[in-house]
Length: 65
Image (cartoon, rainbow, N blue to C red; front, top):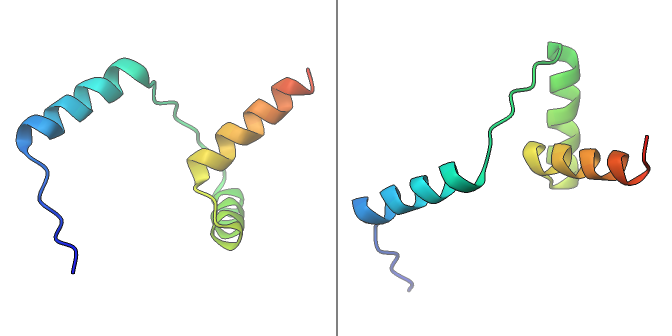
């Protein structure tokens, strides 16, 4: 049996500080129907929505469109 220790408050603060330094949050609004379609697709394919969107952006930029 594997026992997972709880994350300390200090570790949580360190993780939050690192994330704030290394990531920018980008908000995306879309019609409900499109959001539902995206959600269903990602669940079916085993992707996170954020990961799928990031990859789609990279693919589009690589095609130089």
